[in-house]
Length: 472
Image 1: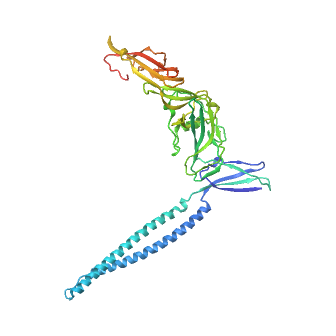
Image 2: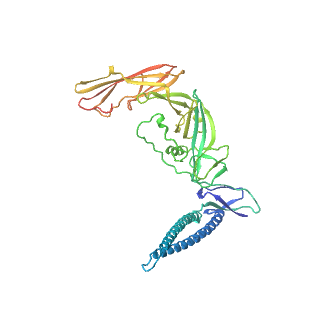
Image 3: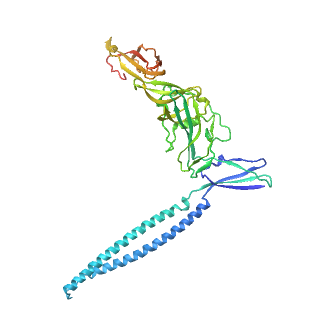
């Protein structure tokens, strides 16, 4: 037999090409059409409201015309009184009669003025009411009514058979981003909770709808993709390790603004799609507001470490490092960090490559400190054979004020010559690893409880004496 099904009440932004229909054996989909229509109940409601508004508009217009006619009569009477208020010279009036005549004119003029003022005020109110009614009527105009999507599906199958059909479709005006709550213990243990910050602006509320959150390219055709050549290139600058400044911009769930890093995350995970299925049903309003939906939670084992830049800050930046993240299904997203029961901040977590360490910044720790100073006794500047020779020595003191061992990475830098006339010579590195290209110095320290360490480095700069040295 044949069957035609019309599915109404759907989002008007459904994508026709992304329809999926699950059929029983023997059944086939012969045709499908997607269209947008105004729901019949909305049309009936709009017609009823417009009829009631039209009736109210007619009553107000009639009242306005009556008040307008009465105002015209008062204006005519006022003009007549003003035209006859003079007394001719041949008329003889007693003083009392003249006084009574003047009192009558005065009282009647005052009465007419008040009556006309009341009428004008009432007419202004009626005019405002008419404008408001016209606005309400426009709201219920057919062109302003919300539309719904409708699928018209035609099936053919065995005669006298009855089976269920499962239909899936996609809308573009919905999405989600990953949001984490991360709590780090003093020992470095990590408890992560993953949420989906979901939104949809279809105009229809999704209540009690089973949700599946997917990372990857959902819009891809059923045809295989076209093979493209993979070309490698180098970006400007050198690769750097993750720092607090690499955390990125916080995603604002209220505004729903997309973060460029989130787009990169979707592309990066397109090859291996991730699918998340929340255990509980939720309600997502159709006005575009974000709803946070719990997905799962997991524990990771981590180690605390510190990174300090003595030239810029005296307090170390604390991190928790873990290599277990690859065993958990994580995606890049916004992270709210709580350390030792204190909310630290939000940052955007960009996942490292598989096999690399995930580093979660915890903010600065005032109990791991550094002090950097020039050793003036060892700093000199002199002229030798037409060149100025400048010697610089710096001393860095690191203190661990914790009652436990800490691992610290100390970073500093030597100046790098950008001119062949400038020569930078390394005299002493104090045990640091040195990158001659970037000039970066790096010490890896393990300090015991309340232990301190002093580091130093020295370099000499030679340049033409008649040239001003910039950047030192």
